[in-house]
Length: 195
Image 1: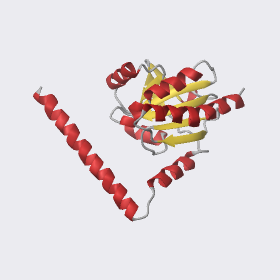
Image 2: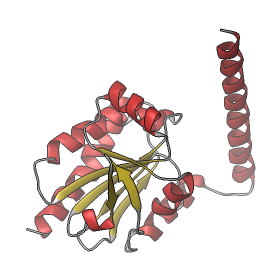
Image 3: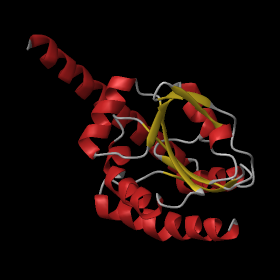
Image 4: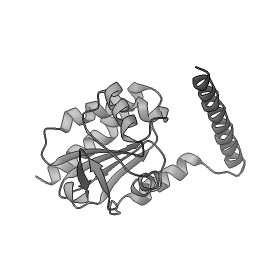
């Protein structure tokens, strides 16, 4: 009980520090005339047209890699458990997956740096049906083009990044809107192109 209490206070202190640090960065950036939204948008646009990096990860006692997604339209999502927007978009991700899972040319893969016990816990809480693979934190950043979390990427059949979006919302409905207004039409268009 005492350990749990100490742990909660540690988490709270770290969270408060993070908020103050982030707020301070935004204030400093605003004073310097830096617009974070523009920077994120520019990073997203720079990723489009690049090849999705090679990866290899364990999945259900097998190796899952670029070879397994070759020739398919891929939706890749990056998350970690302590990221509130990541967790809030899980139900929208499930819905997106359910809407396209019957297409043999489609692959949905979720990348995280969480350990398997945490993955299992999150998968159970959110009833996740799609593939979740664990890679190192460094590999998460390498694969998501050094963007934050959550990040979602559409990859075409040649392994080229067609669309990338970083950030999410703390409200489930806004996340659902993003999935079905930004990603779903692009995925359908990409799938039609390979038929």
